[in-house]
Length: 260
Ligand code: IPD
Ligand code: CA
Ligand code: CA
Image 1 (cartoon, rainbow, N blue to C red):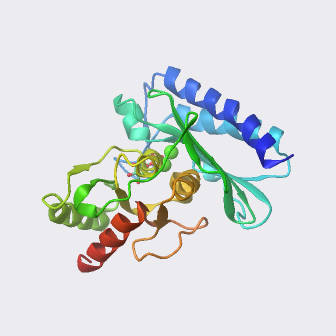
Image 2 (spheres, rainbow, N blue to C red):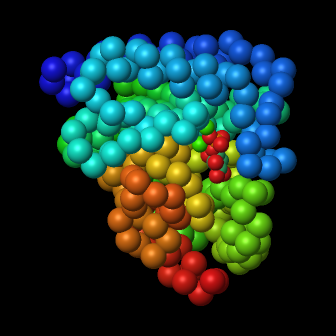
Image 3 (cartoon, rainbow, N blue to C red):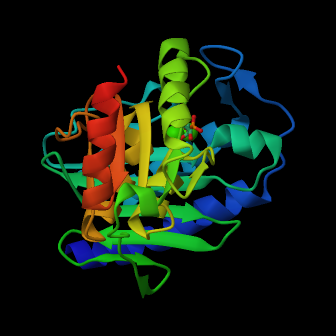
């Protein structure tokens, strides 16, 4: 199968998963690692549905997913990296701002990325070398200095030292940029930086399933995604993320260095 054929067959699978998540009414959330780390039956069911349909589409592919400890060697051959619901807390609380995120890697590098927010009907996608899209419209990053941008950030309550460092960075930025937002879905934050809603997004600890799909979308949109030091991101281990337009990313990385 060509990448184009795979992309065409993946889209309805991701859209079905999104429609299922949107139709769900989460009545019960379980704690994973702590009081602020939630999971619902829909996270698990959606991942199972995606794994079943994506592996039927591409049987030779490995799969990494957030739920049920689904891991594999992402560096060889094809590998899907899945976050069935990114923004589970939003989903549980009824904020209607969550997404299904699926990346396809080939030998460790993303070749297809899809992030779907079924409430907003925004379907972000990219194929390596072919640009990035929201629905059928090409998207590109905001090329502007940090002070002319909105900045988004994420942080998990279950990493207290990182949460407090994030608050120090926000305290510094709040009077220096146009606006600050924290929206609760890392995958959608990366896509917002890809389409220039925010100039730059940062978070001190995310997992590969949070950003694998978005990373291709933002680079295909003319932007960059690195760790907080400006180094390449990893698809095997968690790490910090700075994504968006190149100038704003550079300026934010400089500022993060001053706030350890
Ligand atoms: C979370 C979201 C959130 C980010 C957290 C992630 P989940 O993913 O992306 O915005 O701040 O760090 O864990 O748990 O909702 O899939
Ligand atoms: Ca996630
Ligand atoms: Ca998730």
